[in-house]
Each structure stands twice: as structure tokens, then as C-alpha cells.
Image 1 (cartoon, rainbow, N blue to C red):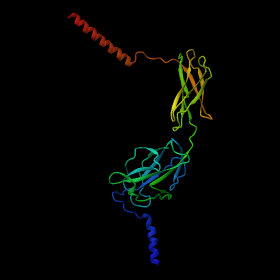
Image 2 (image 1 turned 60 degrees about the vertical axis):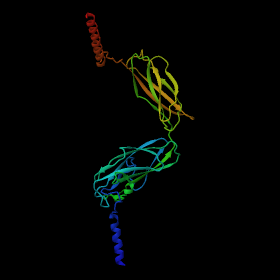
Image 3 (image 1 turned 180 degrees about the vertical axis):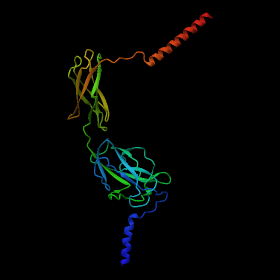
Image 4 (image 1 turned 180 degrees about the horizontal axis):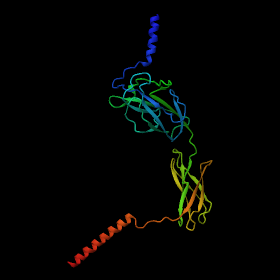
Length: 326
């Protein structure tokens, strides 16, 4: 009985270092893992093993960066710590759109090496509020046919960093909870617009944006008011634009700087609103009147064209003169 107990204890001690054989069509030289999982850049506590979680709204895109890894030789269990060709795979439970930089493909890695894989996830427009999407990231072997193959398994999983006992797995799970989209109104503008003295129709542009990519074309009303330091009236401009979801349309104020002094400043304030009840946004753009810029007349292209024209004209003239003499 004592011999049986000792044998079982010995088997338990040796179990963590036992390495299974690679499936047919696969080889295990390296040891796939994730050095960095879904949320390692978000300032959250490292939580492997365990899933990561974020929120998104319909139509939103978010980019995450992971670090697929060929485990270090000192990491436990031992074995499978040589050069190998690994790959990354990402599986969405409901087929959400994902794009990758660099493109997914085989990566030859020495032991202790990794690559950074960016994954951009887009929530579909028809997803319901409160839906929880599951996306699994896997670091796999490339099989003997050169295909990324999760069926090749994993030589060691998890890999344990001896310094602190942290466990690193070849798969990591991300849960995405769908929340309501924020108000879909935004304004794009320059902080300062330079207007040349003498311009009688200087267009000051504000971009009015329907920031919800899943929204239909939506009317955005606006009012732009000037402090009146540059040019004669009007000092107020009103109107509306109807940008499609995820797009912007320009709103203009037209300033007359024909009689304005140089170094004059003006301030244009826009108030925009959309929806019922209305959602508001406002921005301020500064105008600075500057001296007119000299436009060179004889630039290199202009001189080149003039020279070619003179050569052609001289050639025609000489040809006609030669014909008349004959």
C-alpha cells in the first residue's frame, strides 16, 4: 500500500512536466502562448487566467493589440522551447467583422520572441443592446501543410513564469457588452483660419458630423455668430446639413476682409443641434487677417511653357519663310 501511495505521489509530481505527442500532421518545436492578452494596454490588472471585458456600441470599431509568443526556455513546464512557426487566430461567436495588422499569417519565432498583432473589431449595426459577444484569440502552431491549425494542440498549456508564478495561456477570451451609442453630433474645425487682407469672400468652414455610423441621414441645424471685428454685416449665418451616419458635411460662414486691417482678429462661434429633444454642441474658430501673399508669375512651369511656345512659334515662322523663298 505504501508503495502504491509513493508511486501516485511521484506521478503527481511528474505530471506538470509530462509532454503529450503532437497530433498527426503537426510538429512541436516551440511553445505557443500569449505574452500579452486582450487588455494588457488598458491599465487594468493583469488577470491571466481569466477573460477580459470591454463595452462597444453598434457600428463602433475598436483596435486591440496582443502579443503572441514563443515561450521562454525558463518557463515551465520544460520542453518545446525551440524555433518554430506559429500563427494567431481570432474567432467571433457571431461573426463580427475583424481586420488585422499585420495580416494574419505564419510567423517564425525563436524562443522568447513575440510579435504584436493589432485586431480591429467592428460591432454590427443590427446588434441588440445588452448583447455580449465572445471573441477568442488563439496562438497556434502552423501544421506541416503550412496552415494555421488549432487542432495541433499545445505542447504546454499554461506556461508558468518562474519568477512570480503567473500563468500564460495559448488562448485568451474577450467579452464585449453592447451599450447605447453616445449622442451622434460632432464638430470639426481649425483652431485658427488665416484670411488674406482684401478677400471679399473668405469661407470659414465648420464640419458638422453625424458620428453614429449606424444612424440614418440626420438633419443638423446650426447658427454661426461673429464678433464683428472683420468686415461689414452680416455677422450671423444659419442653415442645416444632413450628413449620413458616420459622415460629415461642411457649414460655411462668409467673411468680407476687403477693408480689414492686417493683424485683425475675429471670433466665430458655432452652435449646432440635432434630434428631439435636441443634442447641442458648440465650438469657436478664430480668424486672423494677414497681408496678401505674393504669387510669383514666372514660376518654373510657366517659364518652361513660354520657352516651348517660343520655340514652336519660331519653327513655324522659319518653315513658312523657307517655303515662300522656294
